[in-house]
Length: 208
Image 1 (cartoon, rainbow, N blue to C red):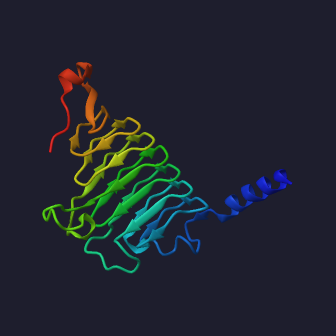
Image 2: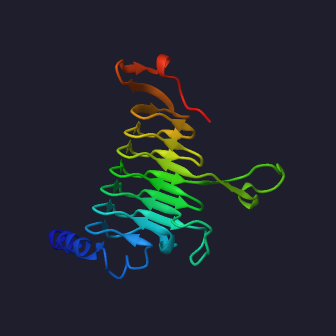
């Protein structure tokens, strides 16, 4: 019996995946050729403000949102842009309110969280969740790799071909061709043309 159940589930996942032009993806602002939204999906809303490039795979249980609630009118378009040839790992969450740009050829491990909004904490006697949030755009440079469980916070800018170690909490600006890790994330290695790879004592950490 379990063999039949597993086979049925595999079949359901295969036929439940959505590509360009399918009912599930027609509401996106853009959904490129040969891209795939895996089944089962996570929570998805604000599709009109989400653009997905070509040849991109969005794994199962990935949540994509633009805004706080379905139907919210946004002030930027797109709010979330995922480039060409990307892979977003299983169970990840990309939660945009103003601007999240994921460049071409970006891959993530599972359970990555990327957001461009945080609540304020000016009124110490008020619940944090009820305080007015602030938005700062996020940019993840082309060719980057984000390991399992990475958290990318508002205002982050990753250069091209940046590696982010598993479990890192990332905020700030990081240069091209660097390896970052830790909580908070810091540069642990950086490649400089004509010099080669430098360790953290030479490369420094985040800025901003």
